[in-house]
Length: 297
Figure 1: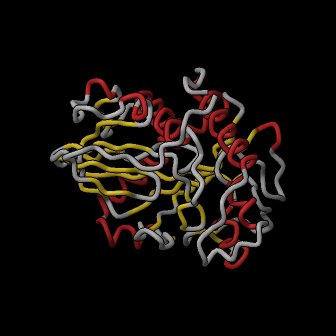
Figure 2: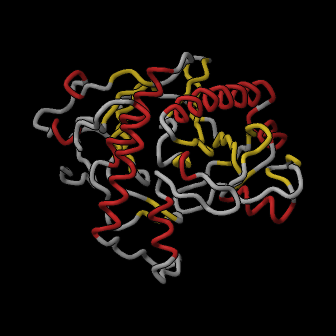
């Protein structure tokens, strides 16, 4: 049964920065990340939250961090071990809150694509390639690429679009050595995630990663292979040549696109059935990939 949606958190005495979906509390050399139930689309935070969405993102990210054999920022997942201010509602924070190492965040979104969808499909139609990478002619929408490709983007300020760039442009921004490390790790993590997702009957069509530096070490940070940072498609419904059904927020995007909203003014409220179906899709993806029941279902 859905719990009450958490739209915003307040932890007395801790400085907070609010992103589109996360509240970030600064603890000096560490950060407290709280994934709320806010949902964004088309660079807007929607007025209607999706109950437990933040917990899905957190539980899936924690699952991947615990499986991956590479340095990452995760330190603690149990709110009762985090020395939080007295009187805060630990039950509301449970499952959506993590303590992490603070890093100097690299200003690049590390995107890995294995299927031709979204902005990559639009770019391919216009140029015959993706992010400066030549592609075979005659590919269809949602078609599997010959091999996964790394397509970086610049991290945009809130309310603005990320901008796809070439790998050469990324090298100019972060340097040759760091760019290569980020590219290799992104492709390696994607390969691990895609294999596990396919075992669960889910195609990981594309995903994005973030990295940060701490003490000279490159750490995987933020969220990892969640419905907010990835395209998850049910493998049994996959058909190239068209958009795919999904376990991610494409369902919400599709409803918004058909609602008559102009995408320039404040977005409309989501209907209850869209909220319920979106929540169910997120939870199903989490349960299938982790192989565990979702504790707040």
